[in-house]
Image 1 (tube, one colour):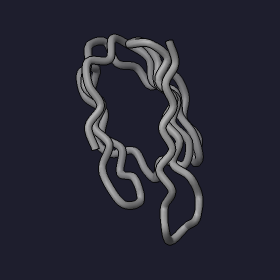
Image 2: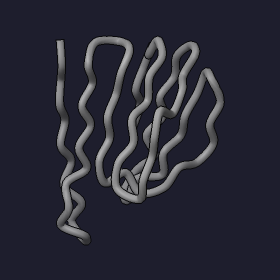
Image 3: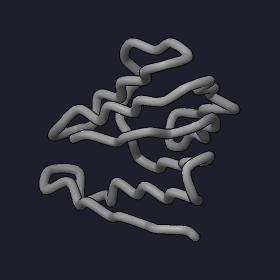
Image 4: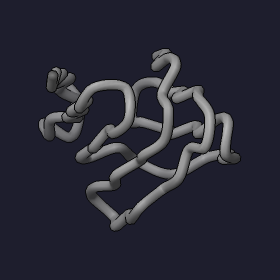
Length: 79
């Protein structure tokens, strides 16, 4: 099951898009910058907030200046 969330940044007028596919994959667009990361926690510095992804065996499959894909067993996502 896939869920998608879109948060619009007021200054940049670009949507922050987060697509979660089950508990094993998350794709993020327009995220800002990558903060701390380990195989149990990934912190993204978004434009107006921080996004914290917690789980087990987390892996950043790829990332560019606008999007990224994270896989692993995702336990929680906090803003």
